[in-house]
Image (cartoon, rainbow, N blue to C red):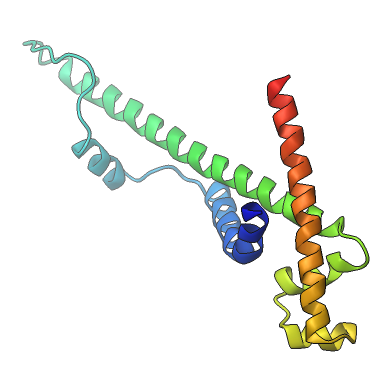
Length: 162
């Protein structure tokens, strides 16, 4: 199953992305004036263009437009960070949970292999088995993880169809 294989190979990359998204959320300050000016310089006006001769309202309209644009950009940016954080958090959380559900000590072995980045030689020494046996354990764990993910996907489909 591609989903399990992807998580095994990209676990640390996704963990880094989660940490970055968390940092961005915790330290979110909005956008700077220069970023706002740049964003507005490349944006297109919305709605119809109306030409008026009322100069007294121009400054107020520009200020309101800038403030509105700034708020919209900040809301969109924060929403992006939050969505990314939620998605990665759920994905990694389920994978880590799935590892704990593996039978016969396979969860601990897979945790050492994936999360703690043990090499096959280190695993072989820690669990007092051959590298070939580690390979067999990994293969067995992959099958169990695929069943766990398949069950989760079935639940989601049943919910969506109900």
